[in-house]
View 1 (cartoon, rainbow, N blue to C red):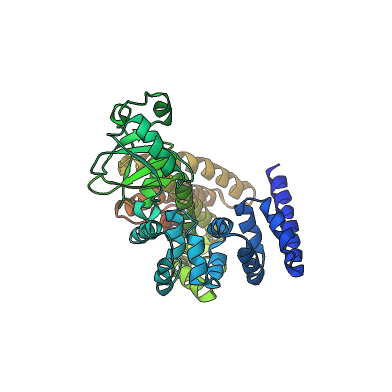
View 2: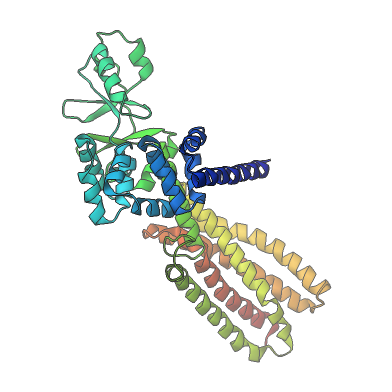
Length: 457
């Protein structure tokens, strides 16, 4: 059913793209506006991503800034970069003026440095301009880089009646009111105010009598990933941001956190695949090569190491040359077990589900590996002896080697991510070629050492 819906959506998008292209070709602006008016700005962005740059620019210059500013935020990053290059500083400023401060800062941050100031100088709203400038000073991977300045703020000394009057004015600038934040005269965060409590309260009551002081918040310098974990843990739609003096600076909403989680997932996926830099499919061959080559070289040297081990034992095997036929079995098993173990640990570290006791975790993986190893070794022994016809002693050797290799791979796959994590290195790097390559080498070495011990060659 899900695939069917995706196919319908894909066909619908293709049909819309064709309609838009036809209307652009005949320059029927009235019909084009009417058509696009029926769709959400995210859908329009999806259509523009499928159009050529010239056609996309035609649509953007046709629609009003209130609409196109939202469309810009939804465009594919590469396409947005091309569009921004083809807009003047004044046109970009008009788009930015329509956006919340966090989105506006994100757009300006994507521009070359020389154009950033040029766009900022053309912003008409001086307060908006000052707030965007403030946000640009924060690192993009911190709470300050994520927060928006738009929020509803009241003072603890206000009465309910006065508060209601002032809230109406503030709410006009806020797209969605998640919470009402309460501050003291020094602008320090005191707590939050329930809209329900505000509505049912008497008009002469003080806000200080209604405020809920137990409120989650983050520091402006907190890491974006840590902010995401806090909001996910407590199911928050928004969270206030304070400075070191507890002064309320802004808020972070769930839509920004979804973007953070998406970016982190993409980064971890690339690391797990052995891609060390943040790259896109459309990047240049040179950039893609620099991102992929380091791990490919590590894999190559790992393969050369495994080959040298095989060559060393090759001369000693004599009549047991059949052992070479099962080298791929050993390598594949070691690699798969290592990747499974490391993936579980990395996921646990990301969700704070893995405690700090490494020894306890290693023992658990050890016993799990013993159970899995015995099951796989039994199947391998039966298949190699009765299907491949290898001598019983050789099949027994392969089975013992598999148990040993599985235990070794599980321990390596568990230990390495935790070790990297404790040293401030992203443990996702351990789930890909790093684990596979190391387990290939150690797996082959273990295999031949056990074979030599049992078979005596």
